[in-house]
Image (cartoon, rainbow, N blue to C red):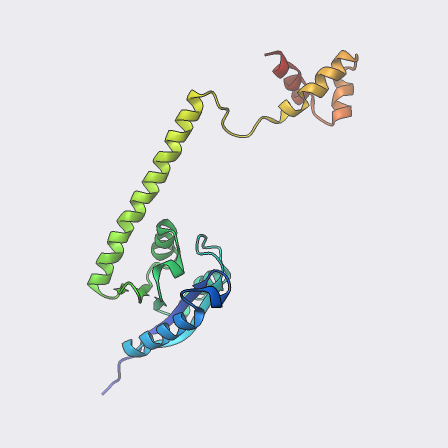
Length: 199
């Protein structure tokens, strides 16, 4: 009788600073992942780790994991916030970067290989979309209020910083060509700098 091939799994663990100050130490996370894989009959091929903030996905361990996706079918993580502290970041990772892989979060009891696990992840995805829409709405409201108060949005035009100098040099009798050479700017910037002060 042919034996069923065990799915290949990798683990991911993360702490932010020194391990001894962490509630969820690397040792605790690694032990839990090993025990889970053994219980579920999965072959654990590697555990990736990071020692930095979970606010960004720009982490060496995550990058290495994503570059070696051909080595596994299942990703096992001790807790959701070990993978990402942002719901938006989490679902970008799951649905884009790790599309086609099955994800397990031990502490939350979420296993994407089961229909219950997929349901829970879909519910979390709805919250992530709500969070995204909320952020967009707040940005739009903030920009609208800023415009009402007459706040200039975006970077200040380059020519503004030359305004005083251009006026001073013109009053000293220098030609546009001499001003451009002295300030190392082009004619257009010099003219804009001059007339910006006049408006």
